[in-house]
Image (cartoon, rainbow, N blue to C red; front, side, top):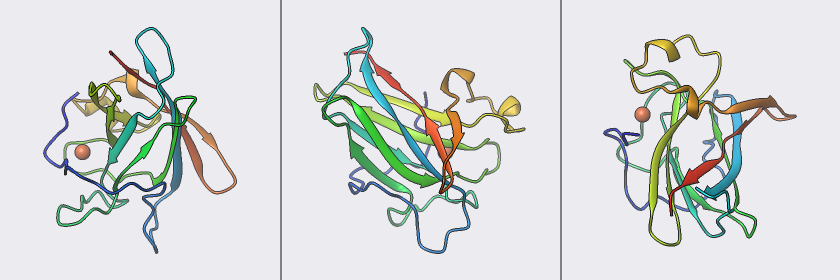
Length: 148
Ligand code: FE
């Protein structure tokens, strides 16, 4: 999928993108990075960027930008907030997944039940997260399959 206009290279490595005093709904996005033949990929880089809860990107710094690495089982987990909408777009989280081989998947994650999904030309139901409630907010399950 398109990376859009707001990607910034060289984000920091961090397990949580949540900013102090945010009013956003906390969500832990988690899942596996897999090859096309369904093998988990250790040491893949999951690079996330998104708007804050009000729909604004930080284009001067690295708020709501960061990456995590998959573990030995190919699992990643990153804490953030549900992003706000901005004009023309439904709620979405941008992701680049880099395999150790250098192959990269650029994609976007969407949320079920958003009324703006249907009118967003980039939206695809293939990239809808599976949501559940947790003690601190929500969990968004999303596996990424990257052709190696
Ligand atoms: Fe965007």
